[in-house]
Length: 89
Image 1 (cartoon, rainbow, N blue to C red):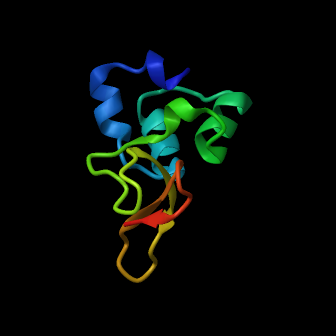
Image 2: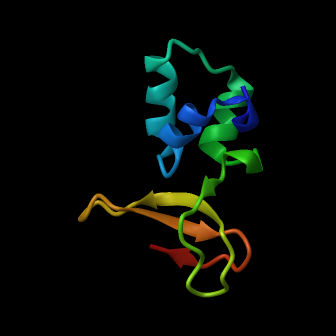
Image 3: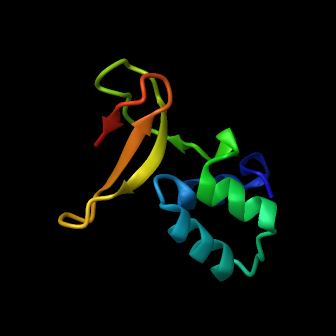
């Protein structure tokens, strides 16, 4: 399944989620991801799975932000800008 194949409701559910959270949502939906799909979600190889950011990069203004990790102290996700490569919170 590609990001483009998701329903609007599913796209809202995965927005801003970590790869692990996306995999859990797929499991809850009863969908088994193929190895290629797992790689695309977890490794970010498919640009369609990039986060559709509500805010732009504060450094360059781009909206192509990709999940980069979760702050263990706050639990907040952080993202890397695909244009300038900087971390955005």
